[in-house]
Amino acid sequence: MSERRRRAEALFQSALVRAIAFALALAMAGLVLGWPQAFAPEGEVAYVPLLLVLWGLAAGFTYGVGFVPYHPVPRVLLGPGPAFVLLLGGALWILVRA
Image 1: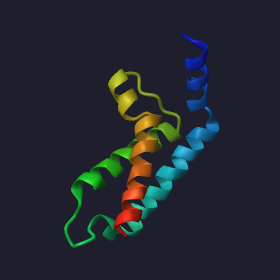
Image 2: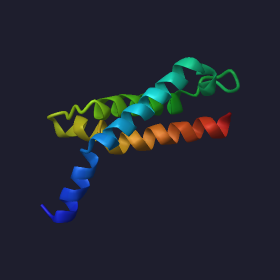
Image 3: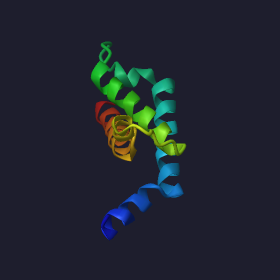
């Protein structure tokens, strides 16, 4: 394994990055539960963005608490990449639509 890859993995395993992912997932969960109209702007529920945000919530909480799945498929689907991309994308989608 190269030195660059080891440093990247060490960064994603740091407690600070995990805490940021957990806090972002917690904030998005509060937003989804506290303001559900964000996903139904014209009275119709936007199912695809809601599904992606819920996937991001699952990934953010899973990664934030430090759980690393053994199987490679859930490890990729619930890792830091999808967590940050989907949560930040969902927040951006809500801000643009609001």
